[in-house]
Amino acid sequence: MDVLYNDMKRDHLPILGVLGALVLFALATTRYPGGYDWTNNTISTLFQPRALNGAQNSARSIAVLAVFMFCASMAVVFKWISSSATSRFHKKTIEIGGIGSMVYGFLVVTPMHDLLVTVGLVFFLTAMLATLHMLYAEGRSGIFYAGIGCLALPLTNAAMYYANVLYGLLPIIQKLGMVMWVGWLFAVLRSRGQRR
Image 1 (cartoon, helix red, strand yellow):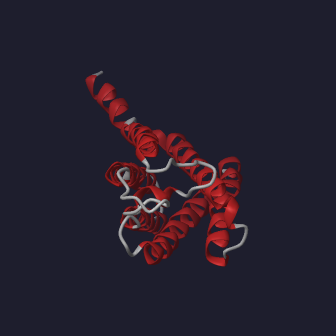
Image 2: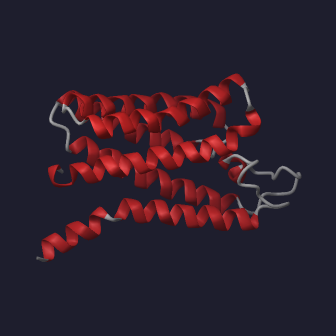
């Protein structure tokens, strides 16, 4: 009974990490000089050394901690999904791509933001496509098609970011896309629960 209880507690760690990161992001927005606008500012605005109004960004350290907590939590999710894969290809591709995307995702808080967004995106798409392929190969069409839908917004976000198209909508698409792919990965993890 204690083993089952400990497994259940452990299984909740990634979601608690993501929720903790969200609380830290919310706290950072209250400390952002000049005010942070969730619909008009991207997430990366929070961890820039200077705020948009030119003041020293007092929210930066909290936002960096939030990014770290989020990325660490999602790296665990990718690792656990990969460990439930039956093929070595899916196992390694999801693990390396997913954990790599979260390492580079955290490093976007550095001055090399633009380059690391690109590197992180390549790793992320690799992990997500491998996860989709694994689900397709297993005949799990419902969650497979949901995953395609969830990947649409991050791809739209990337297209807007790199092409500088409809840039005013980018902050909204960025946040909606994150909610969708994070939620989908947790659904995949839960659906594979006992296979870990």
